[in-house]
Each structure stands twice: as structure tokens, then as C-alpha cells.
Length: 120
View 1 (cartoon, rainbow, N blue to C red):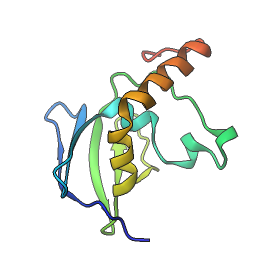
View 2: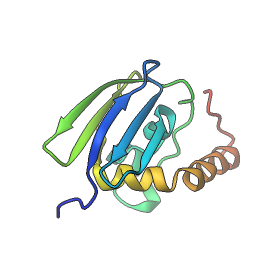
View 3: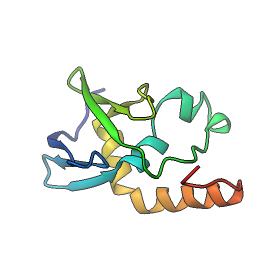
View 4: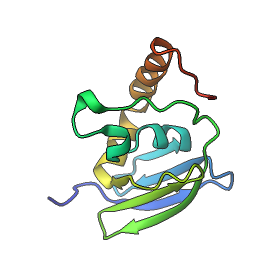
């Protein structure tokens, strides 16, 4: 299934702490590396069912080392903690941007409920 949303620009911030994505419909998202890391679409984070999804602590200061194209439909992000198995499709990145506030608030609530921290 082809994506209906296409990025016209992907730009890694000089700090390597955020990724700017400009879509062809004019929507722009600045996604923090921490958010992208904890929302990785990888099986390591998402599991193979909702019950297996992991809450990933200690990623406040994570950086994106590289952005690698995957065909013409996605990118693989390589983080400085060596996580590199998530393939971020254009629609998934768009959803992450559109739902960033709600998703990150839910993540913070999960951390708190599990006694975990963004720093460790």
C-alpha cells in the first residue's frame, strides 16, 4: 500500500536531537529524537502484539546518528544507543507528528506508573 503523504524534506538538527519533516501538503513536524526512539516501530519496542509493547526509559538525551533511506517509502533511524531496527514509514511519521502531544503525555504517564524515568 503506497503512502498518501510524502515528505518533501527531512532535516536532522545540528544537535542531532530532533528531526524536521516537511510534507508535501505543507505540514511541518519537529520530532524530538527521544520521542522517535521511544515510539520506534521496531518489534523490540512494539512487540508482536499490544500486550508486548515496551515502555523505554532513559532516552531523554538520545541522539540520531544517521538517517538511512528504505526504498522510497521509509527511513531507518540509527540512534546513539545503537538502536537501529525501526523502519519509519512516511504515514507513521506523519501520525507521530499529528499525535505527538497525546502520545508523549501517555508515555510520561506510563513511565510514572512503572516507576521509570526519562533519565535512566
